Length: 180
Image (cartoon, rainbow, N blue to C red; front, side, top):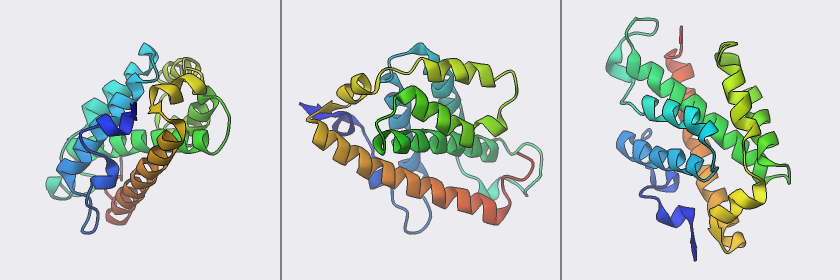
């Protein structure tokens, strides 16, 4: 039957990271994350998808000094990283436990995005977390056989986590997130 990971155009596993993260490959792989939210089968995650789509922008370094106004690509990439960190932490919780997705995504939200969201946005995400499908239904949508799905999901997730760590470190070392 195959898996979701066989259908995507670019995987994080294929993104070159030896000399920094290849931007076009990274963006192409990130489009697959947006598609992954389709498998959750609820329009409640459209807020997450729209946010990620809106933040798929180009590079940081030459955009301006940290703290400068109008650094929209820097801010867009930062928010995209926050969303990817949220997604990675939710999926990591899910594959390492038997908890339902609503719990995995809620716990991941609490340690990633929540601190950056206003009291107006937090309830929207709370509704999205409650609308998660049952884990068995989500994993079934990822394909068959399940042992192959688990193997491919782990490899994909490890590559995503490495990219997020590298890019977060880049932001921290350069002070690019300052004021964002």
